[in-house]
Image (cartoon, rainbow, N blue to C red; front, side):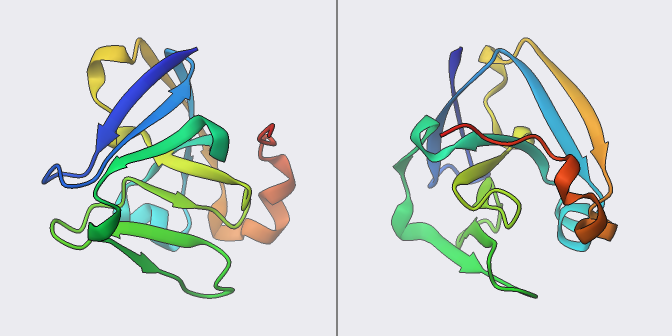
Length: 127
């Protein structure tokens, strides 16, 4: 396991996440992931920590209101959020990780456009 650092475009929001150096990421085609380019790294909340910029975060919800999409109120980048599929975890945007600790990213597709039919195929997050 490696401690990765990352953040938003302007640098106000910074975080760290404990995850493998070789990342298994999920590319979802639901409306918001497709539009924002969010590439998912699902982790437990205990493996994620905001280092700075909580005061710059704004939350967006839609549809069921379960997912909590956090984005920087200055630059607009969503570097992480609490997903509906894993409400006890965090989905980190792999695109927002600093590249120096990432050895490789393996990407698998997820049909989030048909979320209800496919959510059971997602890997669980251990607490």
